[in-house]
Length: 298
Image 1 (spheres, rainbow, N blue to C red):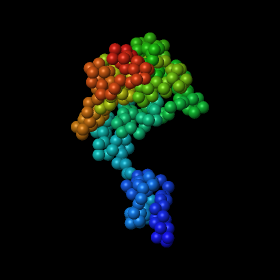
Image 2: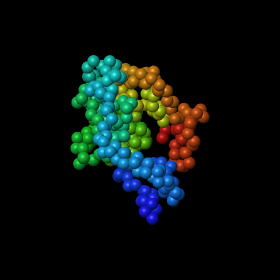
Image 3: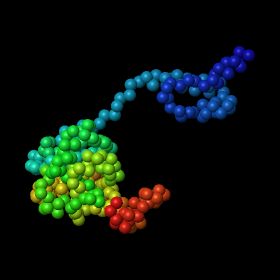
Protein backbone atom coordinates (compact mmCIF):
# COMPACT_ATOMS: atom_id res chain seq x y z
CA UNK A 1 0.00 0.00 0.00
CA UNK A 2 2.77 2.42 0.88
CA UNK A 3 4.58 1.74 -2.38
CA UNK A 4 1.35 2.32 -4.35
CA UNK A 5 0.73 5.60 -2.46
CA UNK A 6 4.32 6.75 -3.17
CA UNK A 7 3.92 5.96 -6.86
CA UNK A 8 0.71 8.01 -7.01
CA UNK A 9 2.46 11.00 -5.38
CA UNK A 10 5.38 10.79 -7.82
CA UNK A 11 2.98 10.80 -10.77
CA UNK A 12 1.34 14.07 -9.73
CA UNK A 13 2.38 17.01 -12.02
CA UNK A 14 5.06 19.27 -10.60
CA UNK A 15 4.02 22.93 -10.30
CA UNK A 16 5.94 25.26 -12.59
CA UNK A 17 6.90 28.82 -11.75
CA UNK A 18 4.84 31.57 -13.47
CA UNK A 19 6.08 32.27 -16.99
CA UNK A 20 7.79 28.90 -17.33
CA UNK A 21 8.00 27.37 -20.78
CA UNK A 22 5.09 25.16 -21.81
CA UNK A 23 7.37 22.79 -23.72
CA UNK A 24 7.40 19.31 -22.21
CA UNK A 25 9.55 16.26 -22.22
CA UNK A 26 8.03 13.05 -23.67
CA UNK A 27 7.55 11.79 -20.08
CA UNK A 28 5.61 14.89 -19.09
CA UNK A 29 3.45 14.66 -22.19
CA UNK A 30 2.73 11.01 -21.52
CA UNK A 31 1.82 11.90 -17.92
CA UNK A 32 -0.74 14.46 -19.17
CA UNK A 33 -2.31 11.93 -21.52
CA UNK A 34 -2.81 9.50 -18.62
CA UNK A 35 -0.22 6.92 -19.68
CA UNK A 36 1.89 5.05 -17.15
CA UNK A 37 5.12 6.72 -16.03
CA UNK A 38 7.89 4.72 -14.38
CA UNK A 39 8.81 5.97 -10.92
CA UNK A 40 12.44 6.52 -11.95
CA UNK A 41 11.37 8.73 -14.87
CA UNK A 42 9.08 10.77 -12.64
CA UNK A 43 11.88 11.27 -10.15
CA UNK A 44 14.19 12.42 -12.94
CA UNK A 45 11.63 14.92 -14.24
CA UNK A 46 11.09 16.30 -10.73
CA UNK A 47 14.82 16.65 -10.22
CA UNK A 48 15.15 18.54 -13.52
CA UNK A 49 12.39 20.95 -12.49
CA UNK A 50 14.02 21.53 -9.10
CA UNK A 51 17.40 22.24 -10.69
CA UNK A 52 15.77 24.73 -13.09
CA UNK A 53 14.00 26.64 -10.31
CA UNK A 54 17.07 28.75 -9.62
CA UNK A 55 17.30 29.84 -13.27
CA UNK A 56 14.01 31.73 -13.08
CA UNK A 57 15.42 33.94 -10.35
CA UNK A 58 18.52 34.99 -12.29
CA UNK A 59 18.44 38.63 -13.52
CA UNK A 60 17.98 39.06 -17.26
CA UNK A 61 20.42 41.50 -18.77
CA UNK A 62 18.96 43.67 -21.57
CA UNK A 63 20.60 43.32 -24.96
CA UNK A 64 23.26 45.97 -25.43
CA UNK A 65 22.82 48.20 -28.45
CA UNK A 66 25.82 49.21 -30.46
CA UNK A 67 27.07 52.73 -29.67
CA UNK A 68 25.46 55.23 -32.04
CA UNK A 69 26.89 58.35 -33.63
CA UNK A 70 25.30 61.42 -32.06
CA UNK A 71 25.03 63.19 -35.42
CA UNK A 72 23.82 60.63 -38.00
CA UNK A 73 22.25 58.17 -35.48
CA UNK A 74 24.02 55.27 -37.18
CA UNK A 75 26.12 52.69 -35.30
CA UNK A 76 29.59 54.18 -34.86
CA UNK A 77 31.24 51.41 -36.90
CA UNK A 78 29.13 52.34 -39.91
CA UNK A 79 28.90 56.08 -39.32
CA UNK A 80 27.89 58.13 -42.37
CA UNK A 81 29.18 61.49 -41.14
CA UNK A 82 31.98 61.60 -43.78
CA UNK A 83 29.18 61.91 -46.36
CA UNK A 84 27.34 64.70 -44.53
CA UNK A 85 28.11 68.39 -45.14
CA UNK A 86 30.76 69.80 -42.83
CA UNK A 87 28.24 72.38 -41.63
CA UNK A 88 24.42 72.39 -41.78
CA UNK A 89 23.06 73.76 -45.02
CA UNK A 90 21.93 77.38 -44.98
CA UNK A 91 18.24 77.42 -45.86
CA UNK A 92 15.39 79.83 -45.20
CA UNK A 93 12.60 77.21 -45.49
CA UNK A 94 11.29 75.54 -42.34
CA UNK A 95 10.77 71.79 -42.66
CA UNK A 96 8.38 69.80 -40.46
CA UNK A 97 8.55 66.00 -40.60
CA UNK A 98 5.41 64.25 -39.31
CA UNK A 99 6.74 60.79 -38.49
CA UNK A 100 4.61 57.72 -37.89
CA UNK A 101 5.73 56.01 -34.64
CA UNK A 102 6.51 52.79 -36.52
CA UNK A 103 9.28 54.60 -38.44
CA UNK A 104 11.07 55.85 -35.33
CA UNK A 105 12.98 52.63 -34.55
CA UNK A 106 13.61 51.32 -38.06
CA UNK A 107 17.28 50.68 -38.72
CA UNK A 108 17.47 52.00 -42.28
CA UNK A 109 15.43 55.18 -41.82
CA UNK A 110 16.38 58.33 -43.71
CA UNK A 111 15.03 61.11 -41.46
CA UNK A 112 18.09 61.17 -39.10
CA UNK A 113 20.34 61.69 -42.15
CA UNK A 114 18.11 64.50 -43.35
CA UNK A 115 18.06 66.20 -39.95
CA UNK A 116 21.84 65.91 -39.66
CA UNK A 117 22.26 67.97 -42.84
CA UNK A 118 20.00 70.84 -41.79
CA UNK A 119 20.03 73.43 -38.97
CA UNK A 120 18.10 72.28 -35.89
CA UNK A 121 15.83 75.31 -35.98
CA UNK A 122 14.91 74.60 -39.61
CA UNK A 123 14.10 70.90 -39.35
CA UNK A 124 11.69 69.61 -36.70
CA UNK A 125 10.42 66.04 -36.34
CA UNK A 126 6.98 65.44 -34.79
CA UNK A 127 6.25 61.80 -33.92
CA UNK A 128 2.68 60.56 -33.63
CA UNK A 129 -0.50 59.43 -35.36
CA UNK A 130 -2.93 62.05 -34.13
CA UNK A 131 -2.41 65.81 -33.72
CA UNK A 132 -4.75 68.53 -32.53
CA UNK A 133 -4.64 72.16 -31.45
CA UNK A 134 -4.70 71.13 -27.79
CA UNK A 135 -1.97 68.54 -28.22
CA UNK A 136 0.41 70.59 -30.37
CA UNK A 137 -0.28 74.32 -30.49
CA UNK A 138 2.95 74.98 -32.42
CA UNK A 139 1.98 72.64 -35.26
CA UNK A 140 -1.54 74.05 -35.26
CA UNK A 141 -0.19 77.58 -35.72
CA UNK A 142 2.16 76.45 -38.50
CA UNK A 143 -0.63 74.66 -40.39
CA UNK A 144 -2.82 77.78 -40.38
CA UNK A 145 -0.16 80.10 -41.82
CA UNK A 146 -0.61 81.13 -45.44
CA UNK A 147 3.03 80.36 -46.21
CA UNK A 148 2.80 76.68 -45.21
CA UNK A 149 2.59 73.82 -47.71
CA UNK A 150 2.07 70.10 -47.18
CA UNK A 151 3.70 67.64 -49.56
CA UNK A 152 0.94 65.11 -50.18
CA UNK A 153 -0.10 63.80 -53.62
CA UNK A 154 -3.84 64.07 -53.08
CA UNK A 155 -6.51 64.94 -55.65
CA UNK A 156 -6.17 68.66 -54.85
CA UNK A 157 -2.36 68.78 -54.92
CA UNK A 158 -0.72 71.32 -57.19
CA UNK A 159 2.65 71.01 -58.86
CA UNK A 160 5.13 72.62 -56.44
CA UNK A 161 7.18 74.35 -59.16
CA UNK A 162 4.07 75.82 -60.80
CA UNK A 163 2.50 76.80 -57.50
CA UNK A 164 5.38 78.96 -56.30
CA UNK A 165 5.32 80.90 -59.59
CA UNK A 166 1.71 81.99 -59.07
CA UNK A 167 1.47 82.14 -55.28
CA UNK A 168 1.08 85.66 -53.85
CA UNK A 169 2.90 84.52 -50.68
CA UNK A 170 6.18 82.69 -51.17
CA UNK A 171 6.15 79.49 -49.06
CA UNK A 172 8.21 79.61 -45.89
CA UNK A 173 7.34 76.17 -44.46
CA UNK A 174 6.75 72.70 -45.88
CA UNK A 175 5.34 69.65 -44.08
CA UNK A 176 6.26 66.09 -45.10
CA UNK A 177 4.69 62.91 -43.68
CA UNK A 178 7.16 60.10 -42.96
CA UNK A 179 5.83 56.55 -43.09
CA UNK A 180 4.60 53.91 -45.48
CA UNK A 181 2.04 55.10 -48.01
CA UNK A 182 -0.84 53.62 -46.02
CA UNK A 183 0.49 55.20 -42.81
CA UNK A 184 0.90 58.59 -44.49
CA UNK A 185 -2.63 58.40 -45.87
CA UNK A 186 -4.00 57.52 -42.44
CA UNK A 187 -2.19 60.45 -40.80
CA UNK A 188 -3.30 62.92 -43.47
CA UNK A 189 -6.99 62.05 -43.47
CA UNK A 190 -7.40 61.57 -39.73
CA UNK A 191 -5.84 64.91 -38.75
CA UNK A 192 -7.92 67.91 -39.79
CA UNK A 193 -4.94 70.21 -39.16
CA UNK A 194 -3.28 68.95 -42.34
CA UNK A 195 -6.18 70.11 -44.48
CA UNK A 196 -5.33 73.79 -43.81
CA UNK A 197 -2.02 74.04 -45.74
CA UNK A 198 -2.01 74.00 -49.52
CA UNK A 199 -1.36 70.51 -50.90
CA UNK A 200 1.53 70.20 -53.33
CA UNK A 201 3.26 67.33 -55.07
CA UNK A 202 6.50 66.80 -56.97
CA UNK A 203 6.43 66.38 -60.74
CA UNK A 204 9.79 64.75 -61.16
CA UNK A 205 11.06 62.01 -63.43
CA UNK A 206 13.87 60.90 -61.12
CA UNK A 207 13.80 57.33 -59.80
CA UNK A 208 14.35 56.64 -56.13
CA UNK A 209 17.92 55.93 -55.08
CA UNK A 210 16.66 54.28 -51.89
CA UNK A 211 17.03 50.92 -53.63
CA UNK A 212 17.30 48.78 -50.49
CA UNK A 213 13.64 49.32 -49.59
CA UNK A 214 10.68 48.38 -51.77
CA UNK A 215 8.47 51.24 -52.97
CA UNK A 216 4.88 50.86 -54.25
CA UNK A 217 5.59 52.45 -57.64
CA UNK A 218 8.53 53.57 -59.73
CA UNK A 219 7.64 57.21 -58.99
CA UNK A 220 7.75 56.93 -55.19
CA UNK A 221 10.56 58.64 -53.29
CA UNK A 222 11.81 58.27 -49.72
CA UNK A 223 11.22 61.05 -47.20
CA UNK A 224 14.80 62.28 -47.55
CA UNK A 225 14.49 62.37 -51.35
CA UNK A 226 11.20 64.26 -51.20
CA UNK A 227 12.73 66.82 -48.87
CA UNK A 228 15.82 67.12 -51.08
CA UNK A 229 13.80 67.84 -54.21
CA UNK A 230 11.31 70.15 -52.47
CA UNK A 231 13.98 72.21 -50.69
CA UNK A 232 16.06 72.57 -53.86
CA UNK A 233 12.95 73.96 -55.60
CA UNK A 234 11.94 76.31 -52.79
CA UNK A 235 15.50 77.53 -52.21
CA UNK A 236 16.27 77.64 -55.96
CA UNK A 237 19.49 75.75 -55.32
CA UNK A 238 20.23 72.35 -56.91
CA UNK A 239 23.29 71.91 -54.67
CA UNK A 240 20.90 71.20 -51.78
CA UNK A 241 19.51 68.15 -53.53
CA UNK A 242 22.98 66.82 -54.34
CA UNK A 243 24.16 67.32 -50.76
CA UNK A 244 21.14 65.68 -49.15
CA UNK A 245 21.26 62.64 -51.43
CA UNK A 246 24.94 61.92 -50.77
CA UNK A 247 24.48 60.14 -47.39
CA UNK A 248 21.54 58.15 -48.79
CA UNK A 249 23.68 56.94 -51.67
CA UNK A 250 26.43 55.97 -49.21
CA UNK A 251 23.94 54.11 -46.99
CA UNK A 252 22.57 52.05 -49.88
CA UNK A 253 26.05 51.34 -51.24
CA UNK A 254 27.23 50.07 -47.86
CA UNK A 255 24.18 47.84 -47.39
CA UNK A 256 24.54 46.36 -50.88
CA UNK A 257 28.19 45.55 -50.20
CA UNK A 258 27.15 43.66 -47.06
CA UNK A 259 24.44 41.40 -48.40
CA UNK A 260 21.45 43.64 -49.07
CA UNK A 261 19.70 43.31 -52.42
CA UNK A 262 18.25 45.90 -54.77
CA UNK A 263 14.50 46.05 -54.14
CA UNK A 264 12.46 46.76 -57.25
CA UNK A 265 9.12 48.53 -56.87
CA UNK A 266 5.93 46.53 -56.41
CA UNK A 267 4.66 48.09 -59.65
CA UNK A 268 7.67 46.75 -61.58
CA UNK A 269 7.34 43.26 -60.08
CA UNK A 270 3.63 43.04 -60.88
CA UNK A 271 4.03 44.24 -64.46
CA UNK A 272 6.78 41.74 -65.16
CA UNK A 273 5.21 38.77 -63.41
CA UNK A 274 7.89 38.72 -60.72
CA UNK A 275 5.79 39.47 -57.64
CA UNK A 276 6.71 36.66 -55.18
CA UNK A 277 3.46 36.62 -53.17
CA UNK A 278 0.02 35.36 -54.19
CA UNK A 279 -2.48 38.02 -55.21
CA UNK A 280 -4.66 39.14 -52.28
CA UNK A 281 -8.22 37.85 -51.96
CA UNK A 282 -9.43 41.10 -50.41
CA UNK A 283 -11.19 43.06 -53.18
CA UNK A 284 -9.87 46.44 -52.02
CA UNK A 285 -6.26 45.24 -51.95
CA UNK A 286 -6.70 43.44 -55.26
CA UNK A 287 -8.00 46.65 -56.82
CA UNK A 288 -4.87 48.49 -55.60
CA UNK A 289 -2.70 45.83 -57.24
CA UNK A 290 -4.57 46.27 -60.53
CA UNK A 291 -4.12 50.05 -60.38
CA UNK A 292 -0.39 49.61 -59.81
CA UNK A 293 -0.14 47.29 -62.83
CA UNK A 294 -1.89 49.92 -64.97
CA UNK A 295 0.28 52.80 -63.64
CA UNK A 296 -2.72 54.55 -62.10
CA UNK A 297 -1.94 56.79 -59.11
CA UNK A 298 -3.47 55.40 -55.91
